Amino acid sequence: MADAKVPVLVTGGAGYIGSHAALALIDAGWPVVVIDDLSTGFAWAVPEGAAFAEGDIADQALVARLIAEHKIGAILHFAGSVVVPESVARPLAYYENNTVKSRALIASAVAGGVRHFIFSSTAAVYGIPDSVPVAEDARTAPINPYGASKLMTERMLTDAAAAHPLNAGILRYFNVAGADPAGRSGLSTAGATHLVKAAVEAACGRRDHVDIYGTDFATADGTGVRDYIHVSDLAAAHLQVLERLIAAPQESLLLNCGYGRGFSVLEVLASVERVANCRIERRPAPRRPGDPDAVIADNRAILATLGWRPERDELDTIVADALAWERGLAARG
Image (tube, one colour):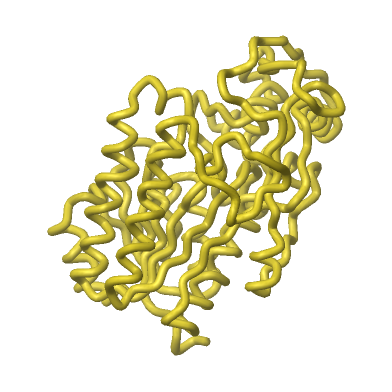
């Protein structure tokens, strides 16, 4: 499909998931342009070989110039705010950054004649699921501004695709973890709330303990169960969605991105201890409001629709890649 490799604009390409997607695109021979305001991303994370513009996705003049100058044919949209507790404390900031700015970006795509748009959404749009595993047609009832801000953008994008010559890929991520196996990128945000990140920080001596938020869930060991997906498998899924959108321009996609199985907090900590050969102090903490017992993807749709098959789906592999990245960060200081 070399002739179909249109230039791709990656928003948030200096961040965690965006940088991995940009790496995967470049590895596969796609021309890549990254736009990132570096509010949470890092300039060093922009892959070698990608053009880079520091700026805001809501700057429609800048985005229009990038689309025109680089003949952008597709947008992969990762830019946004992702911390659930922060979204509860600062809801208007989340609606501004995740919804209002996404509206501006979609408008720029339509005005610039971009034909394909892939959006980084979240399983948080489901809220507390009525049943597990959660399929794409499950009720959407987000319980925090983060999930609500993403669901609003899903709806805007779906409506825009229906009204304009644009098709959309909406990917609902479950719990993303791990790092590039080649050591080129990983989760580097200070104070990140992801469990795997917190646990490998503890394994590297960068935290003195890991909080366990609730030990009375209706699960086998009493701790919350989540579906963890390796960031490199997730990046690969984006490439396959992009190829599908280009091959079928009248088709849009809505797909869960997960492995279809879950691990508890205690199982994740045991994996980190096993891989790092250390003991992590655990401290029980109160349950967080609205935390479901278990959230696991029904991933049958992505497996049936795409040729995507996970390659790094063992929990110890996810942890080993995250740990290797964290050790590199610790050495860097």
